[in-house]
Image (cartoon, rainbow, N blue to C red; front, top):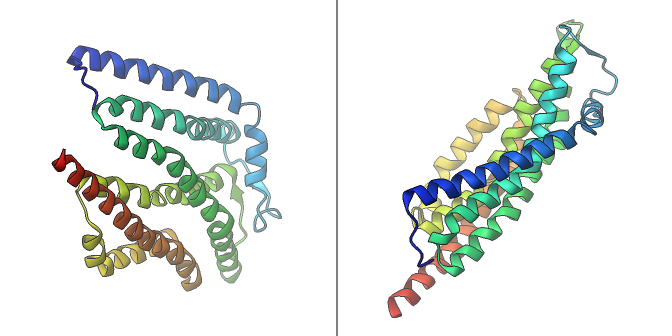
Length: 247
């Protein structure tokens, strides 16, 4: 740990400085996003299932609303590594040297998992959902008019949560290193965890068994991978504790 003690005022000053860094980077990322946000929007409305559909604006402000919404989302994604690093830099003085190195490695792992979750939801799950909705509309004899605002709201509500859900291994490893959970606990509650994952899959997918199975597969792998990661973190945490007792 860092031997230097900081007063409450100094901590607040340090926190303020790091928040300013994040906000400045976010502002720069927001400006940069305006140069390619239109290409991103055009690309996202041209999936295999929607490229034949015509997007409609039901209100005059819908296009600009979507434009700024995605500019903010892009800026937030670009800023997330800086935000995570600033959080780490703020708390790292209170950590041991080994803990600093371990927690620093969480940042790239978290980003990779987030992008993996978003990619899975967009390239695998989203086409199934759109196909199901189109087939249901045809069965009911409904002529669909796709609003661009409603389309992208639905897309973000479906895709972004998967980026968060895919953080499960990082969260489990973090709490394991803190000693709040153990691999044995995760194994003991496995059947309840699967039930929760099944409910999540049923909520975020249409009432289609195939879609629910597609979602359950990565969620199950994530949970089992989290148990394996927790075992590694638990062993390292116990080893570090034993070394500390011996010193």
